[in-house]
Image 1 (tube, protein in one colour):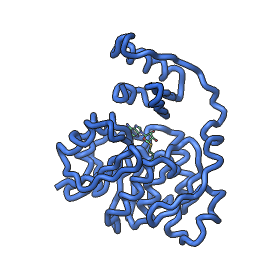
Image 2 (cartoon, protein in one colour; image 1 turned 90 degrees about the vertical axis):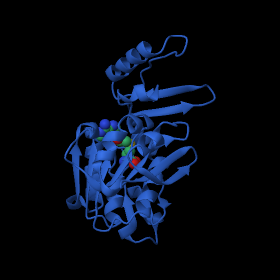
Image 3 (spheres, helix red, strand yellow; image 1 turned 120 degrees about the vertical axis):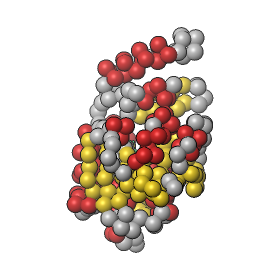
Image 4 (cartoon, rainbow, N blue to C red; image 1 turned 180 degrees about the horizontal axis):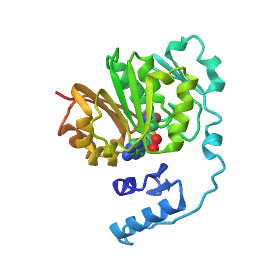
Length: 260
Ligand code: SAH
């Protein structure tokens, strides 16, 4: 069902294990209705019940994120602008300031933190990094802080890119990162020695072949955004890459894979 939902670009998914239900958010009623249609065609009514609802869009992202505080992830500190002081002793060189807004990626989600740690496990000095689904731009900023010579961040969401652009300026690295409004499933002639993909289990599984081609030989893919229950992801990625390391935080996983 998650794989099917991916085609309609949900903006957030909340799982409720107790009720065995999912709450799936979309940017528009139209996207939601098309996703409902597709699910109804795929599953019969006995397997799945769907309740479309409208929720007010009153800057929910801003409100829900107003209480966020700085966090430390390995050598990096990620902080909202209002908590810089608490980030304290760390040097600016290892601090990433992110204004929480519509772009996913404040460092407060396990998958983002796992990617931040994975980037620290690789030697990025002087290398190019390609970030698929850049959201707030957090991983491109981290890559540059960790020594990458250049980063490219792609996203299909113009709001996320606007937010990423502001974050790059806020961190003083606009000239080393190139942001592009592009779908990673449609790109060719673009590759990097280090590719990061914090996406969803469905996208990683279905597009594993494409992800592999984006990694240059002897390069690495960092893949996250999937949980241990999504058992198809690793076998799909391991068809073209070899698993070097698997990290987890609660149920979230992050794989570092190498291309020979
Ligand atoms: N890299 C950030 C954000 C991850 S959220 C972090 O690690 O926190 C995933 C992002 O991928 C979202 O911003 C979403 O818009 C984007 N995305 C989803 N499908 C995509 C696709 N097919 N091509 C490019 N970006 C995509």
